Length: 371
Image 1: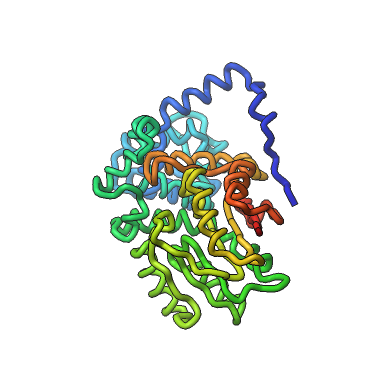
Image 2 (image 1 turned 90 degrees about the vertical axis):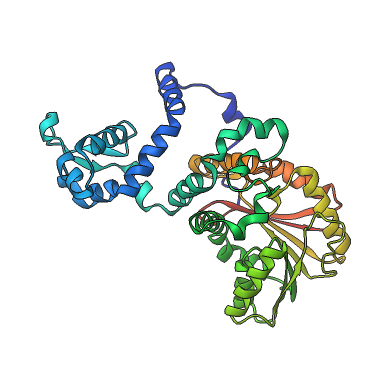
């Protein structure tokens, strides 16, 4: 069922009051510094202490003492957090001398909401420094910000296994958070009527979906297609899960003409994969699948489509992720709308057979194509 709240009409309206629009503009103007203020509060433990204080609140003196930072340092961070509605003052606070801080609703989400945590760490550890090259990336069509990690990589996927541990953790937690929540809902669809016995997992990454398939269905055999560095990791994970005999790999760049896909599989699966490519490349990949697929093969595409979101916060997150692709990942892909992704796949000869929107709490779409 399509529960999306978005239509193009929403973006034709501009009913915000001028004074509120001015405030929104200030948030943008100071965004880099306010982001770093919250990062500092998280890493210094200030927000955790404020949360632990509960409704009684905690004073700036107590915060400074417990975190071993100056009253000045704790003060400037807390004042900015007040302005951002991350923390609030207690009802008993009547003047600066007796001010006590309590956690606001926004602060609660920063500390406890897995979506926010994944997005925040991903932005900080993967995107923040490279985002300064966003303009250059738009001009060149290349991920100019990627040079923050290496000037030898053309796309970020080449170096995922070489990232430092903190950056690697943030990248994979971001990637897996979005797709993993949809997996339990997608499995009954894929393995419903006439379940596949052979499945090709294109862009299988660390083998999470392939392992989930083998656990869900005892008869399926999976082949993961991905870059050599990723298939090496996938093989280790598949073996550790006890599925080395049912999960194989095919190493190669799917865009490379020399990379041949397994033929006549019952199903071809791509989870959060096609957003890593331009629309022309999406069609090229779909043509390669079309050539390999049998007449009755099914092609499944799992993607968060920004115009099929139920909540504004989800749509905003999906839109923002496109900027990561521009300046860090590859310079030419994005998070797509439903129609543009469908049309790019159908241009290869496939036809959309079914569409399941709003899967999982992150509102994924599962599209099923056939010849």
